[in-house]
Image (cartoon, rainbow, N blue to C red; front, side, top):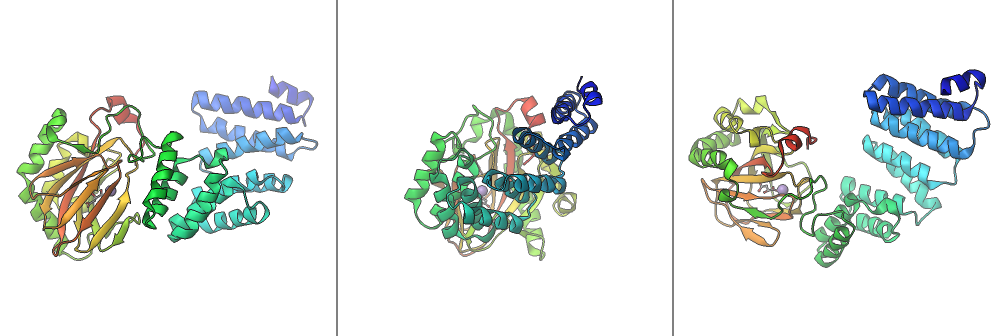
Length: 397
Ligand code: LMR
Ligand code: MN
């Protein structure tokens, strides 16, 4: 019908918008990228016509950007953002949207400069404030500026600022600055907004209704007994392989998520996101063979299996993993005295040849106050209450 309308009225903005919407819906139903590209082309046509009502121009181009982002066409999306900004220079929303696209593709400096411009014109724009603070905290590790701008943004209560990522990083910045009281207030506020499962469990990629507790015991997970036994029975073989890689220079890699306060903490990855690292597994073949027998670990696309080495004098900031879909099993391999891990409110240590099991979506913190290296094997496993369908369809992390 819209095609017919366009035959009669070849420059009808509503005609093109209707055609684009139809193609958009059809693309969704048929899972067709080709149709989606056609939809995008027609959304764009709306913006090229004369006398387009402002409201139509806006919804057409916003949807166009949304679909371009979905297709990964960020470069093209930037051009559409600029059209919107050009047409509506007094609406900060369109500039914020551009900043989000820049952030998504890692063009941090461009994002920062757009946000800075917004804040020069609209110093109390919540959306710009939280994003600007987020950049200072996460890319520059500037905790003070992170706190200043994120807090000021969150205080505006604009819908845009009610987002787990900002509450997560604002609380973290307070915590690292030593203000645990303020951190806790932010986390509790986050729980009220349903951004976190609880004040201690602050993962952002969650499945609802999974049993949530910081520490687990082997007997509480009957279906994983075979893995647990295999790990404990073979701990000396696993230790030998781990130590042999540790003794060769340059295989263990620095922890990369900026979680370390002091010291030295490195990892040697065997499986990640459900894929085997064959190059590394060639160096520790028996450990990898053992893991491969156990699908709860081998196929855990929301976790890793890795050796973790921690040197004396290390402190790892309190932090939460990304998801409640996994439990983290540690096999103690080389455990000197004075090494501790806190998960939520309970502190424990490791023992050589023994497992500890915790849910790393809960806040945890690690100290090595000893004098020799500590080595553990970390094995992430699917949360035992996930269904087969969930395990098959959840995105990797
Ligand atoms: C963590 O998950 O952050 C720590 O338990 C890692 C480690 O090596 O102790
Ligand atoms: Mn951790």
